[in-house]
Image (cartoon, rainbow over all chains, first blue to last red; front, top):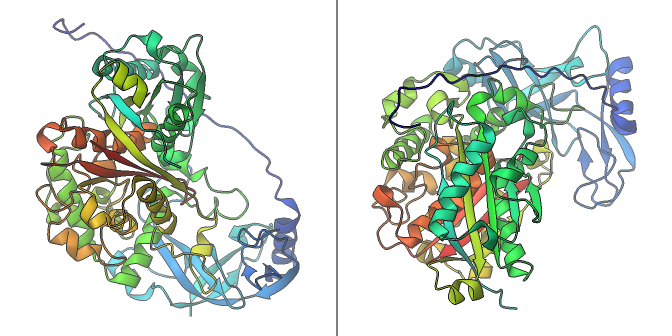
Length: 156
Length: 392
């Protein structure tokens, strides 16, 4: 069709909106029940390596053994990494928001969560305080549903 | 055991752009396939089967879109399978195609695919859905934030600045300006990058790859077939893959299995390819590299994982021009993933571009005298790293 008058090219728009009801399984269900009912966070210990996995998992990806013990962790911890999002994405929260991965006291790995209580408008200023190694405290929502969003972190 | 040699005899790719309103999804696949078949100078009857390169369906908005690809690759009455390893899909497809020939199952095999990322208005929303719905999707995690968090750790550990990141963009855009198939071909300055809006600290708009549409295809054949038919070829002499734990939070903290700042498993995948190809000193033995880096900061840890710089030391080497065209080991002479990202075929294009370089067919972005190179592809959140060594 080259060399001819540009033809009219048509498009067709479509939206996917699909609902799922995900089963969380026994390990995450226990973790979230403790979070919801008692404002407590737990990891799972891999007895072979002694490593406490947070978020808790039913087995260790390293030793490949089932984890055997619940270990209470936090509520204090420190930032291992973070980002601040300034761009709006469809279906995701309105920006700006900060979130990152926190190593809670007693844990050997880091868990993701929002970092709140910080002015985020100017990224350079915000990152004077937000840093790898910065100490944080876990905060719990008044109304908890048994979800990762039931808690967040604030700088100490 | 000496692996049988497998050659690349045909390469096809689109001139990538945000949208291709003149082409449906299968039209784009066919465009690349025809180009690869034309270079290979083969009839479709010579093809024994197809490895189809297609990453998450939601990006093209068609469930199991490989079904639409069957006709576009001339697949009727032949073996056909789809590969999906996220961003690594293209190089995993090349690896699967390689094994089809190396195993003796096929003499000639086609690998092909296409993506239309520019048609998806919500690619980060789609990519958020690759995170588990139990602990991480709600955060909300995504590919930009995941690699921004790698950048934050890399900054903390090795002292990279945002200006250093910007210099990667400047280099790759300069390369892309020479490559007619690249999507973002406008040269930019450090100031331009620094002035672009913050997306996910420390990644700004110009530190990000674009959403590209286009196709890619390669024809691979056995050494026996290539010699019998007196075909021109370059050779796949190394193939390697490696994975890491799903949990990003396990790649940090006191109990870490690797550091999320680095690309540990990519390093393992590179060394698997090097070992197979007999490479012991990549800084001396590699002439050119196409390393999958969709955000500027990730090019640093990719260069280090490929052994082209010591871990944590690539930043000054990028700044000195070591990895620019004209430097010692040009990295992403095509402009790389940073300038073109049609996800389903991006990692295949990395292999294709190294092949074109060692073939001496790269055109304006040709690296003089390139005889041996490495290509890589990354998928998921460090779950899929693929590499290949290509030699003239």
